[in-house]
Amino acid sequence: MAPRKSGAGGRALVNPPGGTGRRVGRPKKNSPETFMKGLEALKRRAVYTDAIDAMGICFTTWDYWLAKSEKGQPGDGFDLEINSEVQRWHVWVEDAKRRALDKTEGRITDMANGEFMEILTNRDGVIYEMDDWLLELGYTGRAAYKRDQYGDPIPVKIPKFDVEAAARVLRSKRPEVWGEKKEVNVTGGMGVLVVGAPMKREQLEAQYGGKLEIADVEFEVIEEGEPDGTSTS
Image (cartoon, rainbow, N blue to C red):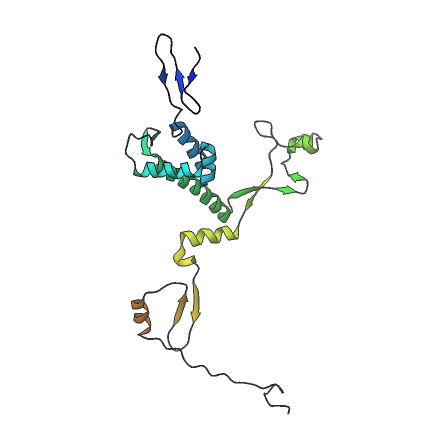
């Protein structure tokens, strides 16, 4: 006998052979399979939208599940076992996001060190390596391409060094040396004033000896006329 529905929007009523009907609910969305889809998406890119789309949920559900995982208790459906390790789902989310960011940081570091290999192209498209042996045999063009173990042509790759990427890595890893600090030389024996680095009142008083007064500045007004300032009238 086919399942009977208990009204509009109700749950399916199943009649097993030789038994009475029993109500079964819809499959839970917060299942391990659904959680894994989100984590795999996050490992590729640390973008919550990708994970939400992969799981087939909305932002409200995403936020709700994260809150439930953070505030809930073991056994409430938000425990997930991966490689024999059990953690709360929100912990795995942070782990996946960190892995994706580490991957991105690794690529940027490779570009900063000139270890990132960029595929060489021209206006006609990708440039492929040529097989010297095939060239000696008289082959030309695509027929002379060097190919990998799968028979696909091998593109020419060159190291790419990115100065901006190098600067970002240095500012991130060694901010005390490469951080963005603006220094302004001031007169009056007060030394160098670092702009953009907030200081507490006690630090200012200790460095400048109490109240700091602005020195008077005199301006010389030159009327229109000769370069030496004399009037032509």
